[in-house]
Amino acid sequence: MRELRIHGRGGQGSVTAAELIAVAAFEGGVFSQAFPAFGVERRGAPVQAFVRFNNQRVRLRSQVYEPDYIIVQDSTLIKDVNVFAGVKAGGIAIVNTADKNADFAVPEGVKLILIDATSIALKAIGLPITNTTLMGAFAAASGEIQFTALENALKHRFPGELATKNIAAAKIAYDSIKGAA
Amino acid sequence: MMEITEGSHAVAEAVRLSRPQVVSAYPITPQTHIVEALADFVANGTLDAEYLTVDSELSALSACVGASAAGSRTYSATTSQGLMLMAEVVFNAAGMRLPIVMSIANRALGAPLSIWNDMQDSIAMRDSGWLQFYAEDNQEATDLHFLAYKVAEDATIQLPAFVCFDGFILSHTYEPIDMLTQEQVDQYLPAYNPAEKLDAKDPMSFGMYATPDYYMEFRYEMDEAQKRAKDVIAKYGKEFGTLFGRDYSALVEGYQLADAETAIIAMGSICGTVKDAIDEMRAAGKKVGLLKIRVFRPFPYEEIKKALAHVQRIAVLDKNISLGAKGGATAIEVRDAMYGSTIPVKGYVLGLGGRDIRKKDIKEIVSLCENGAGDQFYGLRKELI
Image (cartoon, rainbow over all chains, first blue to last red; front, side, top):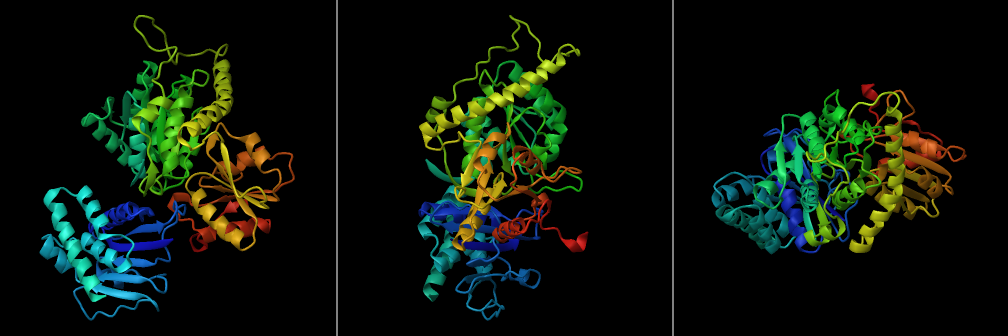
């Protein structure tokens, strides 16, 4: 079983990202499970959401403490929240930042991927909502979900043009990670 | 067909497929997504029901009582403070023998205010006469609604039923569900056709007062119906299994219990975490098993005693506390079930108000139980006491 933890702020769509990643994984034949860290639903407050990927039904109901992957939607969280806590060696941390040279203290053996998701989202969607961009980055970096499945999940969730724009944002991130690999 | 969806939406879909004629509910976290979805179904014409928007939970269940007495299949959903506000009607619905089905997205009770999960709300209603089913995952949460209607409406039972599933932990979780089709549900659950109902052409009364010469017999009949429900659950649970492959005939369900030295007893979503912990403990050579309680009312006394006759010790997990008594409600009942046996029963009150329970906690509880320690709160923050 692999586990993903998403860190964001209320309003950034972390819960939606977890749900759509789980939907895309399910399309790929994976038994996935997505759920939020249940807290106060306050805009701007630190929030978490989780996804588990397994080859059979996920029974475990606790939160995710030792993730294989993390996504950080907002690098300003790093000074307040220990987002890297428990990430497994061999794991991947995807952080949204405009600073190409940012050097976050990830645990040993964890691959740090920096992506300027805010700029990508502003360009493709016209809003600084980074969840779908980071889903594209996650698909490319982790291999847990196919891009076509992600595309289907986005089409199912968002109407017409909004889906097209979000898919475009996800694709830019997906291609940039694939290109860098 | 397998699909992936949120627990609340899966429950709403199960309710839609059960063809309720009257839905009356008041939104409250973490149940709200269920009734939002049902309101959508009625608005978009996929559910042919009267959807009543009411001013409170008290009104929500009161409307169900009236509609059920008039012969309708009725549904409501609530949790926590909402259930407490309904309390008077909860007891009346059972006393009037009305087979209302209500989902409880289990949540802690105030004060202090908590929106998070435990089972204090439905457990507080244990003496009300309602049947109480508890789901381990969202597949059970969906399926148990069909079973609940079938059992509640059986002419020999005629009692309302709670289908309890953990608030947030299940209600807000996306996971794969094998959802039945309308044809399948129709095959299993026929239309509700009560022998007695409010009818202007054949007037009768429900819930009238009873003098001391009559009252006790009403309570006796309800208690007898609870006892009969065991066989009826077994019958319809088996039928569900024959038709759809998931057998719910047993009120309790064992996991790795055959050669277990330590048996854990639990209800609800925590059972999944317990099973994963058991697999790890077994890999390390510890003989631990689980007895999951799926039906809390009627309580499976004989089933528990039979299933655990061979174990050396029992650890009962309770996400509720009967304040001033000996721990949580399940532990108290299990001690009664095991009365006369020399097998020690230890209770652990845990996870109250949403405190997260991990595999390592289950392992620690097993260690405590092996050392004879128990009948305690587990996971207290000592610095706060």
